[in-house]
Image 1: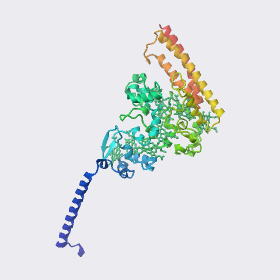
Image 2 (image 1 turned 45 degrees about the horizontal axis):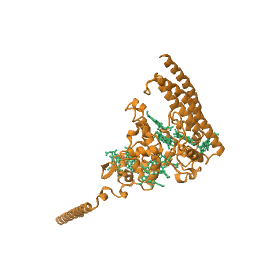
Image 3 (image 1 turned 180 degrees about the vertical axis):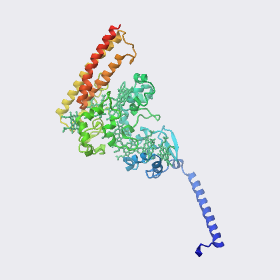
Image 4 (image 1 turned 60 degrees about the vertical axis):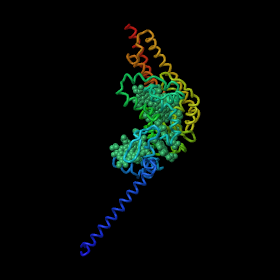
Length: 420
Ligand code: HEC
Ligand code: HEC
Ligand code: HEC
Ligand code: HEC
Ligand code: HEC
Ligand code: HEC
Ligand code: HEC
Ligand code: HEC
């Protein structure tokens, strides 16, 4: 145990060692501070990419704070390709900066952050009805800059330069954010001048094409009696087969090389967006459409022939021409017949208004709600059902209800006339 006994000499030596260590340490810290102050600001404000990888500081701390975010990120193509947290969270032009634990991040991320690396997708998205028209359908033209208005009107005349929706106003401000806006915010204008969000279909951190190809993702918004696309799809042969066979499909296949071998059954994304077997991928969900099915009385779109050719080219990857042509003929017959049924009833209402038996205001008399239900629920449902393979929606949720509504509206109109 002798070595444990401290001699006075050893004590002095130890003190000297500590003194020297502290002196050198302080000098090093001072030197580092001086050197650091001489580095360019961009270097100190934005640490090198290495420091912010999933293994880096953001992930290390966020694993303790919001671990799901990091786990989601780890599943993404972004993590695989070394895209860092900060490359997305960096403020881009027009965004407010936030000092955050030694980093400069933006307080709100938008499609503009994604557009840094995905310009093509942003531009396609930006000219679709998912962009300005979706928000204008609720909020009207007032929400947009003159440039955004002009851009939207160029592709969809009348769809952006329009008044705010009357029904949304009548239901009141409290109903809108979690209601109409919850779906229509896919095209909301952002403070940084960009439009909309990419994360409705891709999520914030998983950024996957598999998620976007899943029908349920579109079905978040494309559901319910006024646009029952997910219900129709689930009833269709396509939907039934997809549910049964999806585990054998490669939903992660790259859009650039997607074939029917990866996905032999179409989902919403396949028909409206995918680049199946050499076709162009498009974030413009409008490009393959030929009718305005959402309208009370549907019209041919200005790109009628082009839109239909593109969609048919897609069907033809899996079906033969006579089948596809017959299918389209049948669906167009339903559109024309529905137009007739809706127009006939709308004339009854227009006559009442002309004769001063209804106020000019919408949604203040029950017959106006009946008219709205007729085209907005049942007319649309019949047309969508016919184009996407939902027999029950053409029939019982569509044409049967159209017949019933016609009788009810005629009776109500007669009662209004008797009452005056
Ligand atoms: C030392 C821990 C730590 C580090 C490092 C860190 N964060 Fe955070 N972060 C937090 C905590 C805790 C919160 C919760 C809100 C708060 O208290 O600020 C948070 C909140 C956030 C938010 C939400 C901010 C808001 O206002 O809603 C984002 C986005 C975020 N962090 C991203 C990042 C990114 C990106 C990095 C790396 C560049 C990072 N964080 C580094 C701890 C950290
Ligand atoms: C592909 C781009 C992208 C990457 C990469 C990315 N984020 Fe995000 N992050 C987003 C978006 C978009 C939001 C939503 C922001 C908003 O709503 O304003 C978000 C939100 C967050 C939030 C707030 C979550 C909440 O629900 O409150 C945190 C925390 C966060 N990110 C941390 C991180 C961390 C840590 C990493 C790296 C491990 C990371 N992010 C990587 C795009 C990204
Ligand atoms: C710093 C550049 C960068 C930013 C910012 C960025 N990405 Fe990416 N993204 C990439 C790269 C690189 C890939 C991989 C491309 C490849 O493999 O072909 C990718 C791939 C993707 C994919 C394809 C994933 C798959 O499963 O194949 C999607 C979807 C995607 N990004 C969405 C987004 C969204 C949404 C945002 C914004 C929230 C965003 N990205 C922000 C660089 C970026
Ligand atoms: C569940 C999601 C969802 C909610 C909630 C919702 N919408 Fe929609 N809306 C959609 C979808 C999806 C379409 C596209 C339908 C189609 O093309 O078949 C649409 C279409 C429309 C259209 C027709 C297209 C156009 O640009 O003229 C209008 C108008 C509209 N919505 C207004 C509203 C208003 C106003 C509210 C609230 C009172 C509302 N929506 C609530 C999802 C929703
Ligand atoms: C966050 C809600 C939301 C999600 C998710 C969503 N959509 Fe939409 N979609 C809308 C709204 C709102 C409209 C109506 C825009 C308008 O015309 O006012 C719309 C319109 C459309 C249209 C009609 C465009 C036109 O020109 O009339 C198609 C097709 C479409 N969406 C396909 C899809 C597909 C495919 C997916 C999934 C990959 C999807 N949507 C996901 C909200 C959504
Ligand atoms: C087999 C292909 C196919 C599948 C799968 C499919 N659609 Fe469609 N969809 C069509 C066709 C065809 C039309 C009518 C095109 C036209 O106007 O010429 C259409 C019309 C639409 C419209 C109507 C736009 C308008 O004018 O109002 C929307 C919205 C839509 N689809 C969304 C979806 C969603 C969401 C899903 C999945 C739940 C889906 N589609 C599945 C082929 C498909
Ligand atoms: C309506 C849903 C929807 C929205 C909104 C959306 N995407 Fe996509 N995105 C998809 C689908 C579906 C695919 C896969 C297409 C396919 O199957 O070929 C995809 C594919 C991609 C890819 C991979 C493309 C490739 O060729 O490898 C990128 C990158 C991407 N999206 C980025 C974005 C960005 C950025 C935004 C916002 C500006 C955005 N997406 C908005 C549905 C969406
Ligand atoms: C990726 C391949 C693929 C695409 C694209 C596709 N389909 Fe199909 N479709 C199928 C498969 C697989 C079946 C089931 C055939 C069977 O019963 O063996 C099917 C079934 C159908 C059926 C039901 C046939 C029956 O007798 O029950 C119709 C109708 C149909 N498709 C129409 C279309 C139309 C119209 C389009 C384009 C808008 C289209 N499909 C696009 C793969 C596809």
